[in-house]
Length: 462
Image (cartoon, rainbow, N blue to C red; front, side, top):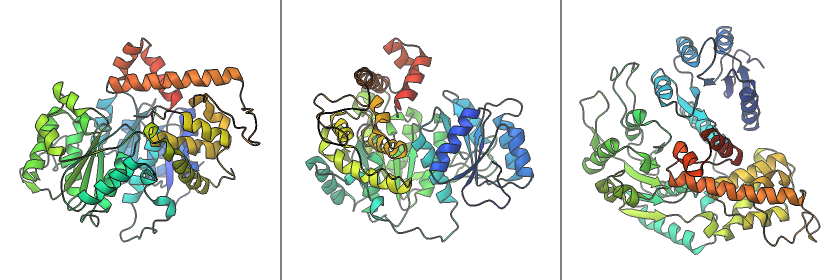
């Protein structure tokens, strides 16, 4: 596909030498409503842009033959200094990411990446590029906080707690497993606070290399380091008057923890390369899936910062402890994705709903959301059975409601159950090893490559 001159608002150019990656991104992005073109290398991409092609965003692989991603990024910046460029890099290439970001990349993804992570990055970039003054469409019924579609006493208690704390500026620490909806709790606190007319700014401390996190938080002055051609605002400045949500705070390095503590204590900070003290009128909400008390014992987290953050603590229960919410969440997601993908699937099959109720959901609400999304797109529940354990007492047939006739063999059901157990073991080992894949592979006595394959196969998401 070739992009026509005079691009529409959401044209994306994918530049990658691997045909499988290009095809996958073309399909995924098209389903999300973007118009996509691709180039198999940097030379082709630059040639297209010089001929008048004007993408709204470029997704660029770094490791390519002939012209690599760095040279391609440099030439893109010669053509357009403001064009958003999202780079793709392999796992463990922190130096590569840092170099590309300093050269002007807008954001980055590591392969293999999560579909939802890519969607969030693109939404964030296109939201920033909206013309000034463009009004947002009013929120419809499908846009409400799905984390609070709940009938449980514990979630009701959390709702009441949020109402009590939203009106003041106390720092909040949100604890819970990955995927339980910690960001939605933070958003709810902000939306009910006196700061709701100001920005809510989120930063994932685990997703950004430690070498870049300080500049992302506090910004930098022009000339602060090689490649700093102009000053940049940090998240504290962007959140002025509003709320700063520090996700995965447990991943922050001790040196940066000390600087954050200074900001929380004194209400001021300075940019990298700057001498001027800036005031920070910001409410901080932090979240983590780690045991911070254990991290303090292991000297990985500062005790004084922990107590500074832990003024108000909100602990979000995992989905397996509130299974009565599963049907409510399924209905919400099904309606949302059926509308988004224009699907004609009439409903969630009854046999699949029973499987959902018997599954332990290690990935919590995020995993359930992705499962329903795949169901709506594929229109056949049998494609989900690999990831779900066969329930002990299934007694519902997909259509008739009689004796079960599942659309797979007994052998496949046994395999799917074993796969579900294996998935949970891998996830548990990853959490215990703080998502260090090398240590996890050693603990499980498998090769690093095999672990990577299993993580991708089972869709395990940090």
